[in-house]
Every structure is written in C-alpha cells, then in structure tokens.
Length: 248
Image (tube, rainbow, N blue to C red; front, side, top):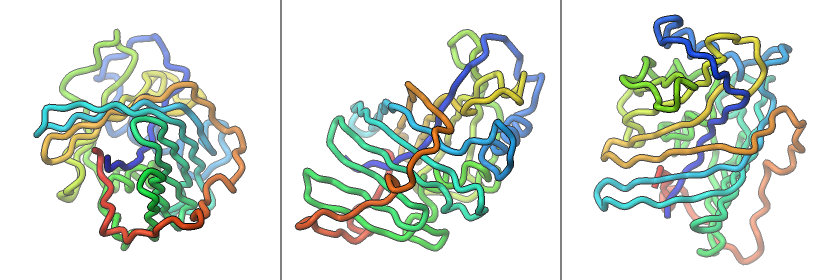
C-alpha cells in the first residue's frame, strides 16, 4: 500500500452552536494558520502527538482499507520555510511502515519490503506539489488553496465547521481537501488546543482518505532526535521516483 502522511488534529471541542454565517471561511482559515505561525502566545502549537486512524477508499475498485498507528509532529517557529515541520508517523496496520522528516530530509521505511526511500524536502523536490505540502505548510494554507465552507455541515450536532479547500493550481494528488475545524475557533479563538479535528482528501480519480486523531497531546516539548532516521544495515535505499507517495 502506498501512503502519505498528513497531519490534522483537534482538542477541546466546544458544544456551542454557531452558524456558518457568524464568521467567514477566510476568517476561520486565518485563525487556524495563526496557530502554526511564530509567536509567543499560549495558543501557538509547538508540537503534537496522537494516535491516528485512517480510512482509505479506492473508487475504481470500490474497496476500503483501514489503518492506524501513532504520530508525532513538531513545528519550527524560527523559520518561515515550508520544510520547518518535523514529523514521525508509525503505521501498525495494515502494514508496518514509518514516515519521518527532520524538515530537510524525508524517510519512508517499509520494513516488510526491506526498503527505505530517502529524499530532500523543499519546494523544488520531487514532492513539491504532493499532499506533503499541506502537512509542511499548515501556517500558509491560503497560499496554496481556495477556501470556502463545505456545502453540508457535519452531522455531529454542530461540533465543527467544515472548510472545503481547493488547490489554486491543478494537482495530480488533491482534488479537494475538507478540514473539520472545531467551533471554539470561531467562538473563542483564544482557547488553547489543536485547531483541527479531521481531514478528508479526495484525489482527481475519486479516491478518498479520511484521518481521525485520538489521545491528543500538545506542547509536550518532544525530543527532536525522534524526527531523524538511521537507515538499518542491509536495507535498500530506493529512489523517490520508484516509491510514489499518495493517499492510497
């Protein structure tokens, strides 16, 4: 299974109802992005760790596959470069694999295949237009997407806003990205917590990936050495073109 990692997480969701007309989609996006920009405010997200649950639907095969694991991310607020997001995702199901980045290098380790893909992370890299851009640039999403409210709100009783993001430039990886934003971000933006609840990605062929996060902890001062990877002895290093990442 080919895969890519995104990151979206929520905490402290307010039960209060606020209609979408009380705040614009652009205002919500600005508040979301502020959590990932440099600043000394208590609301700034420095790092996050959580369990994740993934559901991937392949349209052409009418098949759904689930996955789960753990993730950790840290955000370098001393840099405005989009590669300043560090992450370490560990898949336990359906196949063991790890996706790790120190902000400069990306490792995708597939132990069952005895392979690791190593590539550079920057705007001119092989992956400059793939969904990792969303993961690496949570503070500047509006530079890459048009944002509006999704046609239908979630059916959970009004716990979230749903933001529909469409790429400004055509993408072979993303047709649309829907983010569930906790309503406290519109009601009380000074509240601490991670400002997203979930993400749903649809690619141009209709394949859909949904991510859910649980047991979330933020600003735990995570050790930075976990965002680096040492290639195990005897493991083959694969060229990025041979191991394309997408949402399957």
